Length: 372
Image (cartoon, rainbow, N blue to C red; front, side, top):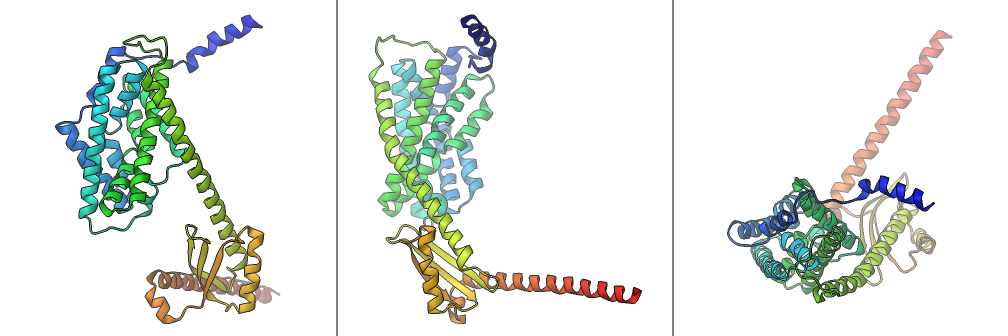
């Protein structure tokens, strides 16, 4: 049995083994070449951060992705992880200084943009980078693994570019800059926490993988050096709130799904439509505000509908129904007017389709009568 296992291991080892395609000195030099933020690299970081801010401010995924592809922000993080793994303290100090410098430049750029822009409302894209979850930790960790494999390849530029998008280091700092510019400390702290999570888990992934690939240590220690232990402790501590946020996100998704199922089953009918709905889960209690057109709901109907909410797990949710809004209310709500027109156009199309079907059936009957 032992012989068979060794044979199988020897046969399959080349499939899962991660080898080095280039000398260690080349890999180290490649990492260091992108770490320093001065001259062109400094301005590249500044401009790409402005680009990321514009993307978040305007909900433009194209601008955000473009900024992440071009940004050199991830380089010091990879450098710190690699230097801790190889006990290269000179490299660690160099990468740490540039990491702090990159953080300051990014915050200055994002804060200046949000101070200057006339659009001060927090968009969905901007808000999404203020509450990291365990899924973002997984993205950072596996992104860090992929990034280091890309660096060790002879032509791994495509991998690194993809990782830059997947791990999303830039948008959280844009959110932090928005918080600083508008004195919204929850956005600042949320964005900063999101960014630190990315850095810790990208660095941890690089550190573990470079040890697995057995990169030579500059100085040999019998025990793990202090910086490595600090990384492990911080990584664990950051895991706790991120897990809570993930649980909170799952609960919100479940609640939203139950709300939509409840509305489909009890509010929307052939002769009644929901023109607009506002679901606010952040309030206590959570509430659903509906604008309904079509068949009028009496007080008895509304009470009967509310009594069914418990069946959908919505007993602690407040339901507010605006039945058949008057013309003034519709005019005051452009989105409501648009939805009303869409619903009416859809109803007209359905009626036209029914009329055409009936005409075809009538013509068929006429032809059948003539043949008889």
